[in-house]
Amino acid sequence: MQNQSAIRILIGTVSQKESIVLHVSKIGVEVATEFLRDHSAPHQKRFAFSYTITIKNHGKEPAKLLKRHWFITDANGQVQEVKGEGVVGEQPLIQPGRSFRYTSGTILKTPVGSMHGTYQMVCPNGTYYDAIIPPFRLAVPELVN
Image (cartoon, rainbow, N blue to C red):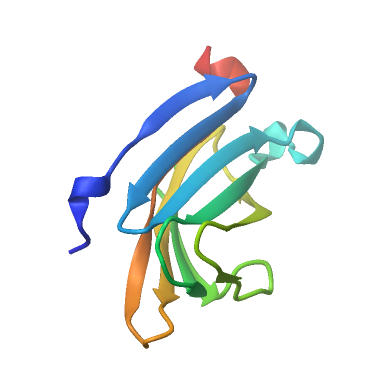
């Protein structure tokens, strides 16, 4: 289990976006989500969302992101599990004090859902560990207010 003494969670809604920050060990993960109205078709049960992730290295040595593992859950409780190498075609090496940001997206069959998961990281000495991505909400803004 990771060192839990460094956990800090901040949740707030800012103009249709939800942000969460979680610091576990020496990696920080920030998430901002947005409902993509122009790419959605509610009458066809298609709700598109983007999420922008910032991964910050608060440690003293580089950390390379090798794999991602997501659990995407809709309001009906249907879970989609997604595993893969890197993120958006990259396996970034994040230097101490630096961050890596990317944007991706997902489609839900319901107007509300959530995501959470992990990134498999590796240090230069060959130590592997999981950086936790805390649960975050995906929601059509009119339904949350």
